[in-house]
Length: 276
Image (cartoon, rainbow, N blue to C red; front, side):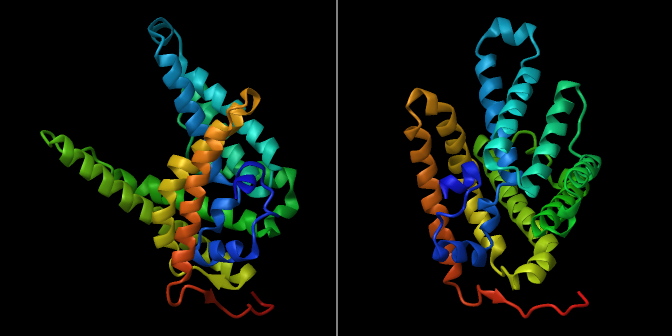
């Protein structure tokens, strides 16, 4: 699993594990796309900006946010080359690159226009990609998510009320984070369901459950561990990152096996006709 997440090579994953990930709706986690690019960029951005902020003279006089954005852009560019650059990875890279370029020139960039630019660039480079399941599912999910977040999230993402206790504010943020995570999984799942049904003849009825359980591991252990592991390879201390990543992957596998064991989890459907 770690090899698949870092290099895009999925040949070493067993058939049983592959099936468990597909049935549980977690297979997108091992297909390098927007989730991974965003986490890599976010981890690098946070590390660099946080490190530079520890130097007061530098933080007060220099645009350290732009330095961090440039470092994150270099990191995701390396990740694109390392992972082999599949269509979904290209889409994610183009969008992340536009967003980071927006930080460099002080412009917000995560909009439907960014997605449209990614479509155009991807189809110029690989016009045949429009028939690729990865292209269709990746862009469908991203389109749905950006539309959802632009319209609805500002209505529910209000800060905790004034005077709330620290515990109350933390609880409010946690509940909101879980609800938004569930909504994200539901929206992305609905957007990609028709493509999954057409290409793979299956649906994931419990995809929201498995994603809500597994996403904290992906965001807090698996991808940060991957970034730390790759960065520490030249120094010989990369086992630190791989160990953290391994704990997260073990947890994710157990979640996929649990969801797969639930009744009705294997949502197989008949093949579509030629008209579809």
